[in-house]
Amino acid sequence: MKGDLQARTVSISGHGGDEIEAYLSEPSDHGRFGGVVVIHHMPGYDEQTKEITRTFAANGYLAICPNLYSREAPDATPEEASAVARAAGGVPDERLVGDVEGAARFLKGLDRSNGKVGTIGYCSGGRQSFLAACSLPLDAAIDCYGGGVVNPPPKELGLKAGSIVHLAGNLSCPLLGLFGAEDQYPTPEEVVQLEKTLAEQGKTFEFHSFEGAGHAFFATNRTNYRPEAAQQGWSKIWDFFGRHLSK
Image (cartoon, rainbow, N blue to C red; front, top):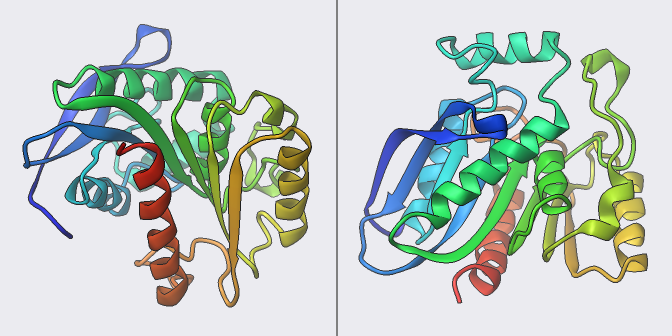
């Protein structure tokens, strides 16, 4: 980490005006900073995602992670909340967009905001980052191996989410995609299809696929973790957000 930071739990106004919990982390330095909405993965609002949120603050961003499961299981552990959300078919797309919009609005309302906000998400959060960027006016978005964009999620996951590739024409900002070449959700073929669709729509994007990496290669607490791919991925993230959020 580069700099000192402050982190705390806050309450924000999400979809439909619902008050939901969120984890906010800010640089301790003086100045104005771009904002990042961190969209947690299916396992939930966990310590690993909060660490990612702090990492953005340490590198000069206002960062917030909304608890997408606040309504279903506000006092549960991340594991319990994830199980409840899965049983309900996952987070509805409309509600996700409303919660991200609320988080972005919260960041822009901070005194040290430079007015720019982007999103980043991992796994299901990658899909949701793409969804948010196709539904809201954002300055940048990052999709880290988000499945369910081109093809619907596998039925065995029990999720009600459908394909959202048809929304590509509405993409409001530059998109960075980071994928594992050995991933099966999304498959390399799905990544190529999304790339083709975005190109046909004339959108600004850059995709990178890492050899020897599968799904969740950023996850330091899982066997899927691939240090070299993750290091390269973070380098791409800092370059991308640096160009689109920091200036």
